[in-house]
Length: 109
Image 1 (cartoon, rainbow, N blue to C red):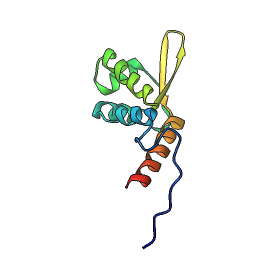
Image 2: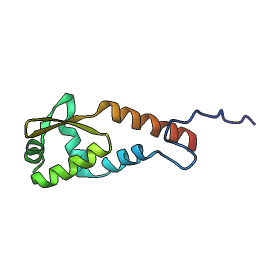
Image 3: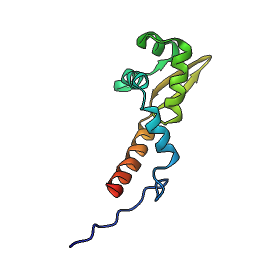
């Protein structure tokens, strides 16, 4: 019987599982509220906390907390313009986490 070909590990992933960045990525997407927020950033949209709160029907404090978790998970990135912080999807962070997740799943499953 043929043995499966070993796969190269992605940095951060190892025998103990996924790296911390990918774990934060998965946590960030684990909430229906954060999933709704992410849909606001389709097609390159950039929004302030207030705009996210208004469009999702949540308070600004809740929007800020949710965006912090999304930023920690490298799902969104932010920039400051004066007193306003604008958020948009973090394509590079998402692609890195997805690559590690794919490598992990190909190895374990």
